[in-house]
Length: 175
Image 1 (cartoon, rainbow, N blue to C red):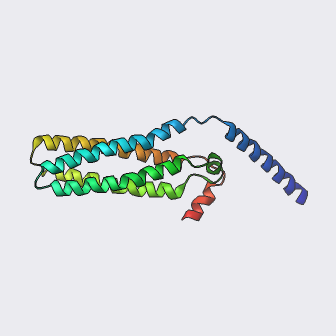
Image 2: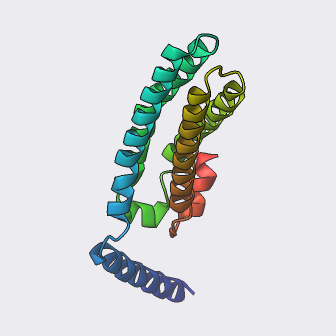
Image 3: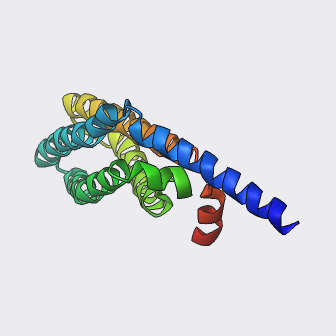
């Protein structure tokens, strides 16, 4: 019985080693697209924040509320970019063995909930906007941020669904 268990262990180690070697020598195809995620997010959110601040300067009644939302989104930007970068830079072998970076994915999901709440606040403020051109600009910025929200949410799903040998153990330990 012991000989049978040790033979099974040897076979499992050999198969795992072959998988790891083939995995480590495989070409990375998703990395460039992931790199674009962080820099693109920075660009879109920067434009969004500047546009909101311009609207806040022109709008009397809701200007302060728009300014607060813009500042909150700007503060969230660096944390989001850093978290995306950490997820992207995770060692492939580590991801293959123990799964995705669930801690950072959770932090990113938390930031996306905050972003969703800010979008909802802006939608409520659109009705209170006095100038039609500001209303249009607010709608455009809301649409832009919703697009970024969708991209980051897809990025989270993509990284959560990565295959791993022992990912189920990591999920159990993170709960």
